[in-house]
Every structure is written in structure tokens, then in C-alpha cells.
Image 1 (cartoon, helix red, strand yellow):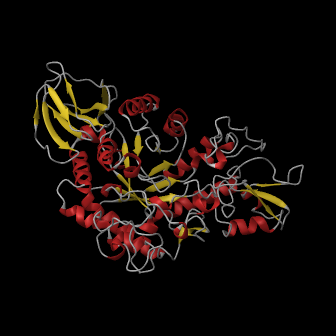
Image 2 (cartoon, rainbow, N blue to C red; image 1 turned 90 degrees about the vertical axis):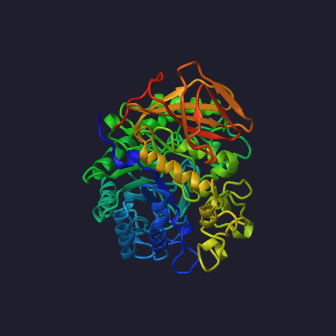
Image 3 (cartoon, rainbow, N blue to C red; image 1 turned 120 degrees about the vertical axis):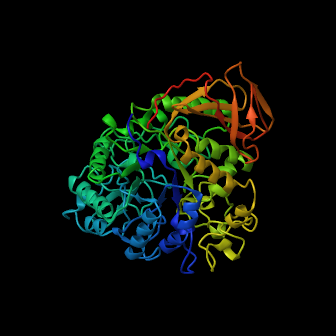
Amino acid sequence: MQSASWWQTGVIYQIYPRSFQDSNEDGVGDLRGITRRLPYLCELGIDAIWISPIFASPMADFGYDISDYTAIDPLFGSLDDFDALLAAAHAAGLKVILDLVPNHTSDQHSWFQESRSSRQSDRRDWYIWRDPGADGGPPNNWLSEFGGGAWQFDPTTAQYYYHAFLAAQPDLNWRNPELRNAMYDVMRFWLRRGVDGFRVDGIWHLIKDDQFRDHPPNPQFRTGDPPHHAVVPLYTTDRPEVHGVIEEMRQVVDEFDDRVLIGEIYLPIERLVAYYGRDLSGVHLPFNFSLLKAPWNARHLARLIDEYEDALPAGGWPNWVLGNHDQPRIASRVGLDQARVAAMLLLTLRGTPTIYYGDEIGMEQVQIKPEDVRDRFEMNVPGQGLGRDGCRVPMQWDGSTYAGFSGTRPWLPVPENFQVQNIAEQHKQAGSMLELHRNLIEMRKRSRALQCGSYRPLVATGELLLYVRQHGSERVMVALNLGPEPTAVTFPAGELGGRILLSSNCDRHDEELASELVLRGHEGALIELFPGLKSGGVTSNLC
């Protein structure tokens, strides 16, 4: 029986720093604001915070275009502010994960400024430069994920440089060993400072084809799809050589005790799991985004969970995500009623859950008026609903002006419903979404079965999703009704007997069950199964 690490048994909470808490009245969240809200995070019960980029940046992509990897952008504060946040978080028992963006820099980074200065620059090969194609245009047909071509002509040296995202975000050349070592030194800088790990942005993008072959056309491309889906990115993502690079990154992290390496990877499950690496030498957690776009019905989710569990390598630890800074809010995707059921799913499946800030109160996707749009993705591809501003609006703390986020107009508009849907109000409401999250997280902390026990799916039909989590003699059955109609299931004698630990409406505590379980529409329940009933499992306990 192996012992579990904090990143396996804990709950991770993502903070988009621009939108969490403003402390200096400039309308943008900052590090001191996060420090101020640590008591709330401790009360919620989470174990680690992952902070989206806070490094020096011109903010073309709001921090994902870094101009100095070892400096804090003044918009967020100072290095002293970061050290104070880190110390306060650690004193409160919280881990701190930073967002590392190694695929590209800002075009204002000194590395790129040197690289573009001359073809003979010592850092020329730190980025991806190519001569024009035979027709004098771009070298090939690679496309930017933010719209348009992925090659930008630079007149200084009469070559093109590659950018997977904005032209202001030139891609680094991870085939260059000097560049790799420089980035590993960046990682060591923050690890020595005491950070508990990294979430690595765009990790499946790091290596590109060294022959620069054209992408094949995508036969499934349809009008209205994101423009870059017109081709299949065979030569710019998920290249086999990337796993050697990730092994090196993991070795850097392993120089320090008890740290975690998480990878952002938008790939099908069968390709995603390769990022655990040979003998688990890759990232500890390749982010599993399968729930972000999954059809919300019980049968599909049951198959998805089984496929993921079956695909995991021996010893690979699962993880689940319902929302992040790039995707529409879960409450808007499935509705507020089902968002409660979704929370029960996220926090009871086997593996590490990540909560996106505000999801614990059911924050919804906000329709951004054209004059308020800030996301360059939306500006580059207008009218297709691809912008990400709507899931990045300020945290709704209370009913005061600007929802308690700031004393001045925020960088993005505050949702219209903030006076009724906020943390202060939900603190007062019995059975609120916030109370549900707090109860679920507290239950995880008390239950070895939920933290690290085995997972066993149970046969169900219709919109009922059933599974058992077990550790030793402790068994918890999770029953989720993903539909609006009541549902009941009758079990053979000896297979059900227990009491409800928690329902999604927080109103059925200690209700005892015999042979029948009845769920209302949009209801979920956690049931403690009595000892002596039939049991079994398909995955071993972690701890």
C-alpha cells in the first residue's frame, strides 16, 4: 500500500488573479487580494491554489505572454507580495501552484528581442525562424489557434517566426538544449522560493515537426468551427519527441521534495494518458478535460469514466476538471440545478478534483457587450462566440458595489445577478451551492474511500449514474440523477442498506435506506453503505 501525496488526496482551486480580489482599487485583482481572501479558501476547505500567470507581461493575452519569467508584473504586485502570499498560504496549510508558460514568450521578452536582432544572434535558435516559402509567403500552412496564419514576417531579418497563438507570442524552440536549460533554471528559481509545483500551459505544443510539413486538411471541419480547425495539427502538437522534454521537466521538479507537475493537454483520453510518461516519468497529472465538453447524460458520462479508468497506466493517478479560464462556466453549460449534481460528481470521482473560482457559488457565463470585450481571441475571430471573457468576470463576494471585488470599475463587468448570487448571501442560505461545496469537501477530508479508495461502477439505466467508492470496510455509494424527472432504483436483497450522508440539496442527512433509493429530479446523494453487504472493486486503494 503506497502512501498518498497531497496532490492526490487534496482539492485544487484555480484562481484567475485579474478577477479574484482587487486590493489597490485599480479594477484588477492582485496578489494582496488573494492573500486577503485566504481565510475564505481555508473555510471552503480546499488544499491548494493554482494561480494563473502573474509574471511580467505586456498583457496581450493577460499574462500568457511573459516578458520576464522571474519577475512579478506590477499590475499584480511585487516579488515581496508574492513571498508574503506564499508564506501566508503555507502557514494556513495551503499549497501554491504557479502557471508556467513555456511554449512561447512575449515578443517583448529579452530573449526574443535578441533573437530577432540578427540571424547571427546567439539566441536566434531559441525561437522558430524560417525563410519564406517558394511563393514568398509563409513557410507552410500552419494556423494560429487565435485566428489567421501562424507565421509572422519580421522585416529586420527577412524571415518568418512561428506563433501558435498571437503574433505577440512567438513560440520557443524546445529542440534547442540551451533554451531548455534556461527554462529549467526558471523552474528552479520558483521551486527554491517555495512554490509547490507548476501547471504547465500548452505542454502538448512544445515540440514542432523539424521538417515543417504542411498540415493535412480536416475533413470534419464545418462552417462556424474555430478557424484553426480547418487543418489537422499533426506537426505542431503531440509530437513524440515532447515526452523526452517532459521527462526533463519532471526531473527538475523531482530535485525538490513533494512538488507536483501538472500538464494542460487538450487531447482524447487515449492520447492524454501517454503524458504520464514511461514508468510515470512524465507529468504527475495530465489534466483530464473530458467533462468540459461531454454531453451531459448519465450513459455517456458512465462510458467516459470507464474509458478513462481503463486507459490509465498502472499507478497513474486520475484527475477531473469541470471548468477553467478558457471554457464556458459549468452552471451555464448544464443549468444551475445540474451544476449541483456536477459538483457531487467532481468531488466524489476517484482522483484529484480542480475547482474553478466561483463555480462553488454557481457563477454563470456572462454575455459580454462588444464594447466590453477584452479577449484578443474574440477580437481576432468576432461573432463566433469563442471569446473567454465571459468565464473570467470578477468574483462575486457580496452585494456591495462591484460585488466586493473592487471599489472601482473592474476590468470586466460584474454579472448582473451579483446582488443575489454571491458568497455573503450564500453563507446565510441553508442548502446553498456554497454550503454543498463546503460539505462535499469536508466529507472528502473525513473519508478515505472518497479521497483515495477504489472505484466500482454499478449498472444503471436512463439518467441515473451509480458508483461505489471503497477503502477497507468503508463504502460510499454515489447516486446521481442527471435528469429532471424523479427516479427510483430497487436493489436485490442484501445489496443496499445504509444512510444518506449528503444530498445535493443538503436536506436528507441521515435518512436510512433499505432496498430502494428514490431521487428527485436533478438530485444526487452520497450513501454510507452498512457493513456486511456485498462489495467489490475494480481499482486498488491508493493509501
